[in-house]
Image 1 (tube, rainbow, N blue to C red):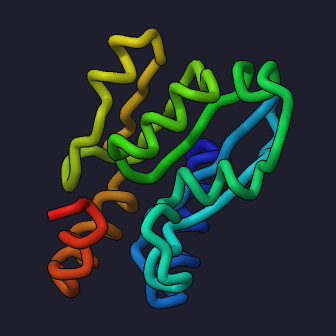
Image 2 (cartoon, rainbow, N blue to C red; image 1 turned 90 degrees about the vertical axis):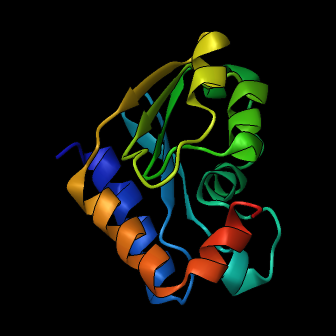
Length: 145
């Protein structure tokens, strides 16, 4: 497995172990992780701490050229909010673990020139399917339903 997707999965598993939603993300610049995070809406009572947003937050304030030369890995297809951050910071490539349990804004990203690769990774699919089956109300809250 790609070590960066594995790092995103580890973040998702950490979020689940903390009682949160199992979505993880890492931002990679020239082969090095510069930001990592996981969904922390439950843990922090946050309305915006999705996995990708947490990875951006943990990467910190960096020059635009760093983000424009980075790849974002995420275990789940990014929602409109996270896709907006991807576009805002000019991330040119996103690698998605799976989009079977949730289809985010992939077409919007592609339409704006972002390369989007979807792996349909079994571990990512199972993390979300089992979580959604156990806590559908929490999942629906996370995606705004």
